Length: 187
Image (cartoon, rainbow, N blue to C red; front, side):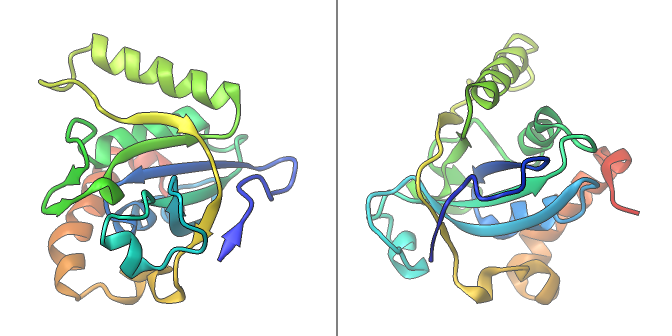
């Protein structure tokens, strides 16, 4: 389903992030104070109206991503990116754990020069701090056409907490986030 990235009210902002499977990122960002909605979808490819199956084949160029609508008066774009870098591995090219392919790449899709600057600055800071043993490979690229993923992908972890992937991959990421960023949790 085609959708415009900037279709939000003037006091809200949108962040579009790809860090492996979108189920993981959606499950984390759903718990953040100031986040109003998180939608799983596809971005960065060359095929109109991609399906999950086509994206998984790795031939469309799309990344599995989340589109986060948030209130910048409550949580900043920089804080959302700090969480992003803590819950996925930004040093593996086209891979997160056992998920391999360009659809699992690490990417920040910005919609303004301000977002681009914040992302580039944070990556520079993390690099200078030598937080990772190898270089960060996260792409910082302009947001293009957003496609909402199929309905069964939305709120996947919340609806399927006992599914194997959720228990062994998504759950530990959510637990790590909750421990490290407790100050950002919704009440």
